[in-house]
Structure formats: C-alpha cells, structure tokens
Length: 293
Image (cartoon, rainbow, N blue to C red; front, side, top):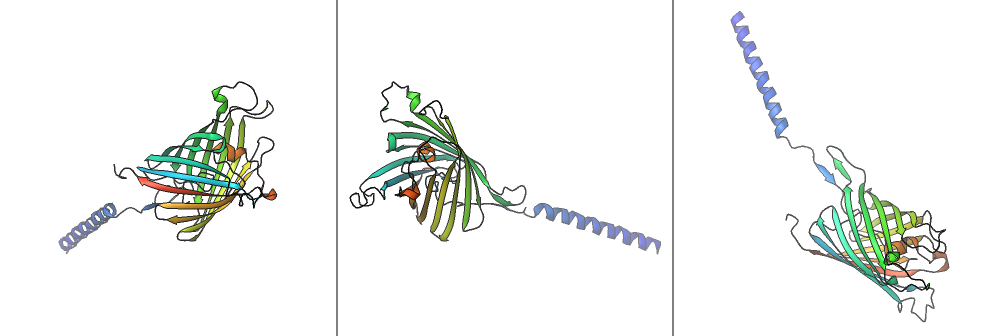
C-alpha cells in the first residue's frame, strides 16, 4: 500500500507539472491584447484655416488650393456677393514619415510665401499598455511678405518675416465628434510701433461633427490673448465633403487672408458688421512611394 501511494503521488506531481508547463506555453503563444489608434479625427489636414492634427500618410504628397471671395457686404450686387473679388493660396506638402509633414505655399494676400512643418509625437490610442487620451503634434511655419512697404522707410529683408508655432491637441470622442485646442505663438519681426509686442499669443479652438459617411460640419475660433489694435478674433464655420481622393471644404469666415500670421492675428473683419467671406479649400493627395519603402 505504501508503494502504491508513493507511485500515485509521483504520477500526480508529474501531471501537475505537465499542466503548469502547458499553461505557461499557452500563455506565451496566446496573442497579446491589441492596441488601436484613432484615425480620421479630422477629414483634412486643415479644419478651415487652422491646421488639424492630421497628416498625409508616409510617402504621400498633398496639393491644396484655398480660395476666399470678397466680403458679402462689399457692394454685394456690384461684386456679386464677393464673387468678383478673390484671394487664392496654393500649397504642396509631403510626408517622408508617417509622423512628419513638410511643405510650402504661396498666398495672394500680401503676396506671401511660406514654408511649414508638422510633427505628430503622440497619437490617441486604446488597448494594451500605456494609452493616450489625445493626439498631439507640433506645427511651425515661416512666412515672408513681398509687397512694397508704404511707410517711406528703408527696411531690412528680415522685416518681412514672421513665424508661427502651435501645439495641436486633439481628441476624437466618438465617430461623430472631434475637438482640438492649439496654443499659439506668432512672432512678427516688424510691428507698427515700439508699444506693440513682437510676440502675439492666442489659442485656437476647433471642432468637427460628422453628419454622414462623407460629410461633416466644422468650426474654428482663434482667441487672441494679445494682438495689434484694429484687428479681431478669427471665426469660421464650414462643411467638409469627401469624394474619393478629394476633400472639398466650403466655409464662411471673417478672415480673408490665408497665411498663418495674417488670419491668426491680423483679421480686420467682424462677423457682426457683415465682414463675411465665402471660401473653399480643395485638397488632392498623390502617392509617391509605397508605405513599405
């Protein structure tokens, strides 16, 4: 009996060890819980004037045309509600990496050229491990105006330059609603007087509400903390329509200029006085390289 009990104990211990080994093996072979990242927080790389958290994919270029007609209250019948008067902007950008986008553009307002970059460093996620409730990116641009100075003084080339810096913080709450905040610094090399600050601060607020699979309402507002006299906060509302590789953005705004420093800190128009401009953005993407290159 003692030998039989001893033999049974040996078998049980072997069985227990085998079960432990099997469980350990299954634990190794079992797939780890997946992590998912948010996408299409906004449909385009711009909300309206404001840059969004989105970037073109790796190896993808994007051409954007922006158009702003004249003010609706500027001799509406004579100018056909602003359709006879327009400003235009072209830009092209490319993403060498999924997190990096670089580009350049030209705006007819003040005949302004610009170069810009956008770098996403945090992406909203859920699932295993550490997760972020928001996506974050850094956006920066440099602009140069090329129209003649009208004050009669000699100027350095650097007087034409201005720089913009933003931290984009966005969250996609569900399939319909996305919101974004963007603390903003605009530095002007030249300001009207010594009493005016070269550094202008503000915070941009933007949102998107999805109506259908291919249509969404958008809005944005730039709240200036300090700025030059005679200018007002920029506010815009619009609608996005996606058609395959194109995104059409139609909007109403009190900012006619489309270069960053101008629409952010130098908007002369006011909504309550009818200084409203009809405009649109059209974007088209081009795949230059395979995402796996």
